Structures are given as C-alpha cells and as structure tokens.
Image (cartoon, rainbow, N blue to C red; front, side, top):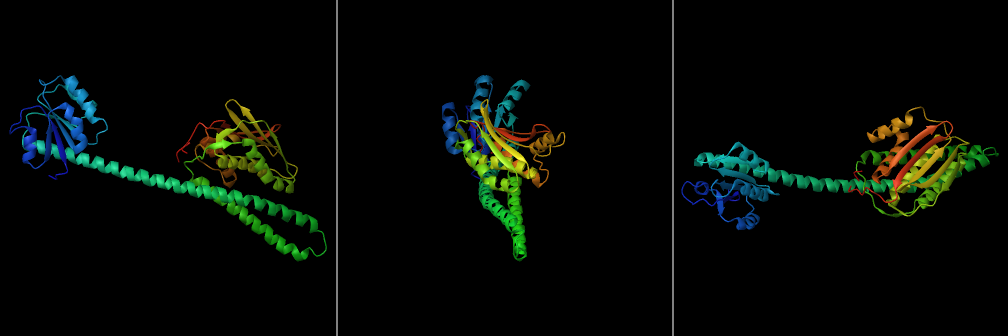
Length: 381
C-alpha cells in the first residue's frame, strides 16, 4: 500500500491483534488512531486522510450522538468514511448512509476482507480527488475562455460601431454627389469611380454585419460593465449617428425624450441596444418613412421605444420572432440586430417588445430597470 493513502481509525476499543487498526498496519497501510473526539478535527486537518474508519460499538455511546459526530466529520470532506459496527439495525444503517457514510462493515471481519474493502474505498477517494482536480482545471479554463470571448466581442462591438458612423457619412456624401452632378455634362467620366465607391461601401457594410453576426452567435454569456448611465444622452448619440443616413434616404427621424433618472447599466451595451432598434426600423423603410424614438419611465424601469410607419408585420410575426430569440434561433441576417437588442435587454434584467399594427405602426422597444437587477459573471442572463 502506498504511504500517502492515510487512514484514520476512530476508536475507543482496547487495542489488540484483532483490532482493525492492527490488521491494516500489518498489511502496510499508513494508519493512525484517534481516541478522543476533541483531537479529531485537528488530526484530520493536519493529516488529510484518504479514509476514515469509525469503529463504533453500541455500548460506548448512544447511536444518536455518534450520528451527529459523523455529520460533523463528513461536512466538506472528500475522503471516504466507513463505519465498523458490532451490530446495526436496518434503521440505524439507513441513518448512517443518510449522513454521508460511504460504507458499513459488520464486525467481526478478517484481515483479507477488511483490506479488500479499504482498497475499494481508497480508490474511490482517489477518483473523487482526481475528478475535483479536473473540475477545478476545467473551471479555470472555462473562465479564461469566457474572458477571451468577452474581449473578442468587445473588440467587435467597438470596431463595428466606430466604423459605422464614417460609413454612413460616406454614403451620404456619395448620394449627394450623385444627385448634384448626375445630370451635369461630363458626369460619365466619374460615373464608374462613383459606382466603384458605392460597391465598396456596400461591401464594408456587409462585413460589419458579418462581424456582428459572429459576435452574437458566439455570445452565450454577457459580461456587463455596470456604471451610471444617462439613457437620453445615449439615445441622442444614436440618433445623431443615423441622422445623415435617414435624410439621404428620405426618412424622417425624430425623438421625444422624457426626463429619465440616472440609471445603472452598461453604457456600451445600452448604446448598442439603441443602435439596433433604430437600425431595425430604418432598414424597413423607403423614402417618406417616419421613425419616432421615445424614452419614458414606467414602474421601476424605463422604456426605449422606436416606432416606424413601415409595412406592418404579418399577424403572429412579432410573437414568432420573440419566441425564436428565447430559443436562440435567428431568422436570417435581418434578425441579428433584434437578437442583439434582446440579449442586451435580458442581460440588464429587462425585456424586448415587438408589436405591429396597421394604424399604430410597428414598434421595437426595450424595457430595462432603472437599477440593473442582473449583474452577470461572464452574463448568463
């Protein structure tokens, strides 16, 4: 037997050649005996045994007291515990097992049978410790992976949103040039370069959408960087970023912002939330379309509402969209911005709302609490 497999024998039985501790010592096990209860905790902490043999005989103390002692020993222990009994009722056996005992041995027992049983339980202890070690390693690796995924998503978020604003400006300038000089003599000389510029802008926009899709499909847990947030400032910035694009497409983009108290949230993620809702409406509209962005407090939270006058969704579509998001199903690239908004709202302890009506228009809205109620660690929501 390897010396590191330490065994504690708890017993007040008079030592003799037939005592369990003597049997195990003769077979080469690393055994030490504790006879006093007040010494037990210190011995176990210092020696960290792989197995505890509790040599219990009925006349020494009442069973109830011994069971309480066993519960105290087992609390948090990774080693196996075997109870040795002279006699044991079925009721006592069940109570021993319920308080964490791994095995019960009826005495008397010969040395071969005792050693075989001890070896089985020592192997079980070794496997439990190895499993605990592997689990700890896996948790460390999982934490490292979650951190790397979050860094990647942060980079993609920053990159896509930082690029989007200048791209919008480039599209506006391109459209203005096209309208100003389209009918002027000599336009044919710059028509091809303008066409190349338009195609490249479209390619960059497509790449931005791909980056956003990659980030979102990889995102299963969201880390929130919580701090004070002025939601109205976030909405004003988002509207400013889309304003030029809306004008160039003949879309009226307006806002109605109610007074909102300073709230707690992730400013970067809430900015993305506002972008996604506004972008979803803009992509639905043609020239002559109208979008109204509103904020208003309600209950212990605040609504960010984006309403457009585009073609109403078919009956049941909003419910299907929200149901798909709950099951992490994205219906094509056009749904990615909404899925982004859904995940961000949920991570903040809020919810997403989609509604469509021929008279009231189509609404994309998010409700988030004024004080975030979900602070996530790598953001299961």
